[in-house]
Length: 142
Image 1 (cartoon, rainbow, N blue to C red):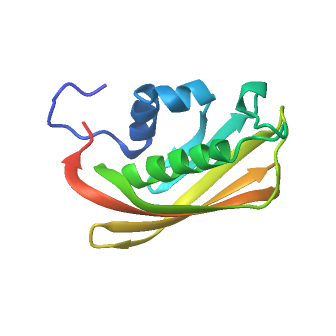
Image 2 (image 1 turned 90 degrees about the vertical axis):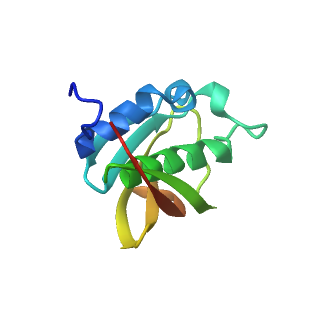
């Protein structure tokens, strides 16, 4: 823990801080598997209360996990980064008990914009593909 309010956090500490302040992702059961500068891998177990009327994982669950990984990776650069456009392709339905991961690396950065793709997998099978754009503000993570 750093004492100065002007110090910035190390890249790998920022997603842990973000998750500790994110009631929704905590409720979902999001787990940080790996994080480093520009990279994040998260995991999540599909619970009964995350299913839709067809007894499949609600599409918002996959979206939320991908969006969280996307945001965590983008913020590792030390500046508050906020999404300005995102989309998802759902490829396979998920069942209660499935464990999914969302993995992303920041692919392109242009001025204050960052572009990423998030791969959501069940084991090695791609189940969804998420794309997003972030805007990096001038505010530092401390």
